[in-house]
Length: 418
Image: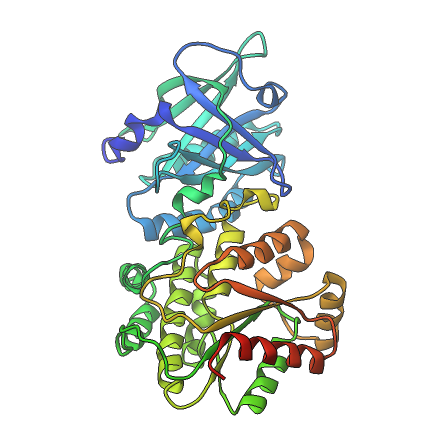
């Protein structure tokens, strides 16, 4: 305990805890108090033995990787009857105060195994374990904060009572989004990869590549048009047609030069993976600036995709869980080249699914999630619409490819110097 962040433990009873009960966004929120009080109704209905495991190390790279593998570790070590639910803990309205982990409901007949597994985890400086005890009347629950001792036994260092918390008007993940899920300057994204070099050697190659780019931000001589949209909305067909119609240069994001390392970073936790793809935007921006000095440029995806997927993935539940419209989290990075126009292609979900099946190509994990999770798809589409600087112009991709092309050419004529 002596090595653990004392600032975290010193504010423990001021924290709010939020359990994700299901993918529809139902949350069980509770706070702590030192005086016995009634627990929230949803908590009082719990019958199982309960624990929480929260990752709270000081090294953000190690903590991100530890949390990324924590679910598999728990499922492999704990009895099969243990139910795992995502849980977060935060100080209300305090940026970067969020820590994540899992809430366990143990219905097994082997409680000693669960406590042994959690006790071993609790000895790590990166983990804080708590157990929850139901009071004799069933209406009161207490949280016991575990503390590892030098003889490797787990002691209870603090006991508080579980009480209802005030409903927040934001999803807890919003507190940690900036320069963690979404990066708003090149330096912050570079910093994450610099901190990752010892454990991910490929980070050095990416940083070397980014270091060769020109960080200056200037207005290009010719228009730059970005085409955004989910997979199978017709981006490839449209961008190729626009290249021919306008005599334009065509770029794709992430840039091809990052291809050798994408598989490596796709296996990393969001903090590292998002930093990698954020830097891809800066490489694309330099390519845009160079090409737009000679001809119009069409770009297949850019920062809107990076930000929208990151924001939609970080929260859970319905569209209302997103940061509110106008939030600074939708702002454009000030050091990133802005396009002249961004077109967002939308398509009926069933038609998009039909096109995907016809293509027969593999999908990213996020694209697979789009097909299986309606709420996730709605969050992504709404996040696209909320990003500013510039905002997306929505175009229905349902009509024929020729009709979509003509509509977009009209938009380019209206918004650009062509």
